[in-house]
Image (spheres, one colour):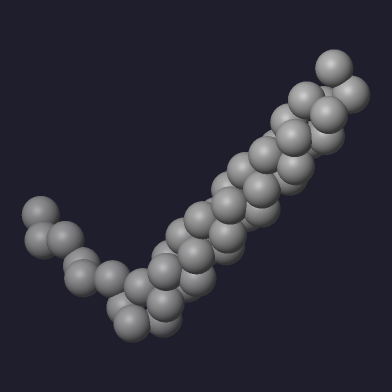
Amino acid sequence: MVEQQPSVNELKEWRDLMLMHRFALEEVNTKLKILNEEFQIFT
C-alpha cells in the first residue's frame, strides 16, 4: 500500500493548529504565573 504525501494545504493547516496550541499553552502559563504571584502577595 502506498501512502500519499500530505498536501501543502494540509501541512499549512497542521502548522497553524500547532501554532495556536503553542500560543494557547503560553497564555495559560502566563495566567497561572500571574495568579501564583497574586496568591503569594496575599499569603
